[in-house]
Image 1 (cartoon, rainbow, N blue to C red):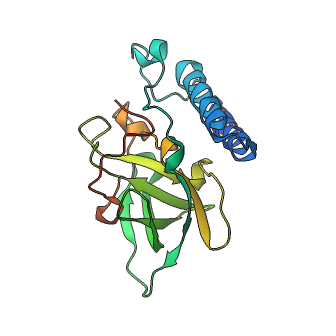
Image 2 (image 1 turned 90 degrees about the vertical axis):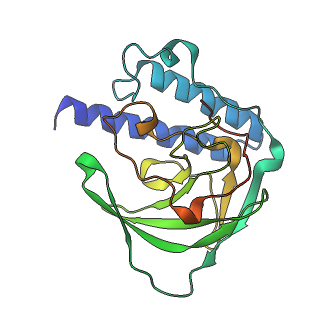
Length: 200
């Protein structure tokens, strides 16, 4: 195993620990503050940071909209009624990712978001988001709400997901073209401006 593989393992371990603490904290705004602080630390100094050496975000930290407690909710998963062909996404060194539609959830700002299963080793739930801020305040390709294959998980049950739009974050390809990321498809696009989570 190369040193870069070990640093990737460490990055994912720390992301997983960060989200575990977020899930355990009953004070959701405090949990969000911890999430921000930990992400800033990782992006500033970890060998796996997607930031280039001269990126000003290493000094300033990542920018976010103010926390809005009304944007945290439990969303029932409405399972898809029919089996659909998987969505295939090229992801550079990770090869081709198969995205299988599980269903959708309703969100309080209006509209629905598709919930995907990433069919790869280990698998995982994936919920990207493109909204009215995309390209106008946040990354044009959208943001991620959940990506459990990478440790991003706020909780849920066998039939529902815990979602908090304050935890929306940019994919690594927003910072560095070295990364290729699955972006939000049409079923993960809403018209409303969601001024919560990470911004440009």
